Amino acid sequence: MVVDHVSIHGSGDGNLDVTYGARDVTVSWSILADPRRPEMKDLVNAKVKFREPFRPFAPVVPEEDAGTFMDASGLRDQYPWRFMLAVAPVADRQRDIIPATTHVDGTGRFQVIQRQWNPLYYDLVRRFGAATGVPVLLNTSFNLRGEPIVNSPDDALATFRRSGLDMLVMGSHLVSKPGA
Image (tube, rainbow, N blue to C red; front, side, top):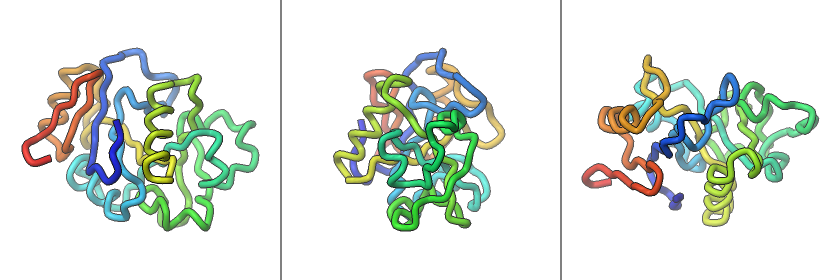
């Protein structure tokens, strides 16, 4: 579920077999947000991650749209894009479109996804793109500063309660805080 201008969301589908590599952050245990909102980076750092405001977040984009948002030369030869292990320049014309995931030097640590790797995650990003015209989401690991990434529904609920997240999606359940 993605809605235009939703504040900040955590997602945990209860699947514990979600890690495929050193930096694999998928919809299974991720904090996802609207990258078009310039203030979103600061909101997630302050209200959710409780960390320094300069720390950037990753843009996640379907592979077929990657060339629109990043200098994707050599993309097919770079397996690390799946795991956010490489940084690329954000396309000049897109820097103002996805400011919450564009680093101060104009780059992004992109996560490029394919539907075959995770249909739920891919479809979520595509639906956001259909609703907003921007098939990119801000993605960061679902954890608070100094804590490991959540690894169970209990971890997800505990982290949700201690953070400034507005909503949590776990499987077919939506949990929200009063006023969210």
